[in-house]
Image (tube, one colour):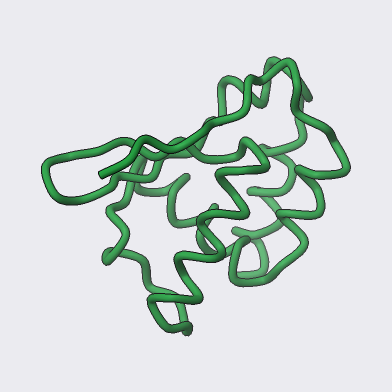
Length: 103
């Protein structure tokens, strides 16, 4: 499998991060990642097809919100919480708190 590009934290743009988090399905994904610590692609509980899930994961990865690592034949998705917290303090905890309160 080819390696995936992950943007450097210093290059993350706040508008891109917020835009990626503006979708309800992506918010669900981020909430599940926060709760679980990491999820393989087939392990998400979201109401979309696998191809649509792949699209949402790509948007989150390209925005710098998640990191994808290879685990055998699977890809593990993890939230880049500490890195984003360094760049934009309070953004993800605030958004995650909002997601939890509406769940």
